[in-house]
Length: 525
Image 1 (cartoon, helix red, strand yellow):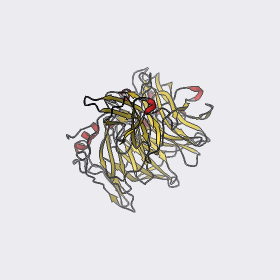
Image 2 (spheres, rainbow, N blue to C red; image 1 turned 120 degrees about the vertical axis):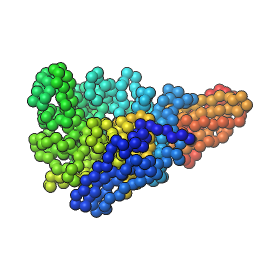
Image 3 (spheres, helix red, strand yellow; image 1 turned 90 degrees about the vertical axis):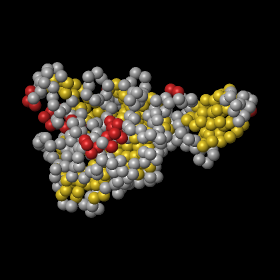
Image 4 (cartoon, helix red, strand yellow; image 1 turned 90 degrees about the horizontal axis):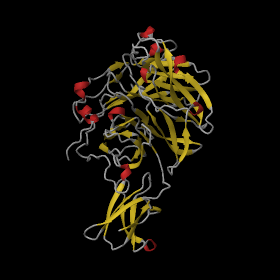
């Protein structure tokens, strides 16, 4: 089978031509990236000083695992045609359990919230809602002890630089909507992040236009500046519990961006793209792309406790943490998360413009010493312009999503690549979670009699996670349906052929123990 080259695959194969090695060493810590000139060296990993340096060089399995095309020709759900197909490049069998949560947008502009298994099979797809422009950040949240799917849907306001006006939706394990999250006073919220707290609140943000004179930083007078508004909202009542405006606490001169020089232009100086609560709940950790800075914000006062600047752009007011090792940097970062051990995980995009290849990094934060030290990095040697994610897995692995480039990679604790997946789409984040769902609607079926008298049957059940086999039922009428044959579940839609003179057929979904989960409507053949 010929190799399918997505944009990500082309970047890997030509990586040596567009990016050189980045290395820094101090006190026995070596931080480096592996050569990308060969397909057999597609990943790098940096350990801490105690364990030295480990570089993973897994063999690409593109020729071993067939490429998976976008889903098309679905007989049971033609409305879901165009859902992104995943191409599994490396699979050692050691990946963490659970399902992959994506929001892929294909070159054909098919986008939606999607769940896949580790083998790349589509489990659930919800296309973009009518009248909406974008869907982002599919994740698992817990609200009042109930596991729920959450994602953002909304519009991209005309002329805005990469944010949205919309809502976050919460759906239960039957795929029924249970809540809609809006901002203060029912206002639209931004696409970039949602945190649902044990207290039943949602931490979100929105962009608000204000007018400022930017001549002091080389810009124009009368410039529209987008203020980033952090909000904590009671989900049940909509009450505002916390409010923080970036423009009141961060000087516009901290930006790494160039302001417009013509009056009336728009300027996104901050561009907040991730929010997290510290484990003790007393502060927020905020990532701002357009200052290449991470901020710790006191929840009680709103004051900035410290800044960690990844970009070399001089100092800003307030307390700063020093990034170590010396000479290191991060640029246009995303998905900054605070963990109980005092570390931060960060997806470091490295561009745009290009500074270094995209990577996931771990920062050991020592507030008393005023330092943040890179202790680990994972990379497959590709430049990333925007988006991306980097999250720990329950087995100790780390899962990186490559943002606008497309694809995801899972790294073992020693840096070995245990799963590498490609797709012809970009996904804002690539996450994984345990998810058990049984849709409230029954399975879908399509059937037709073939020229030889056999009956071809197709079955699917969008979102069902427990189906392991299908039982085809047949009879002269619905009342006389009886089992004909069982087939293993193979993909989102399973095709089956039975030899029967039945006039009516249906399908029954069975779990791993052969227990009946649900039965479809019947179809005449």
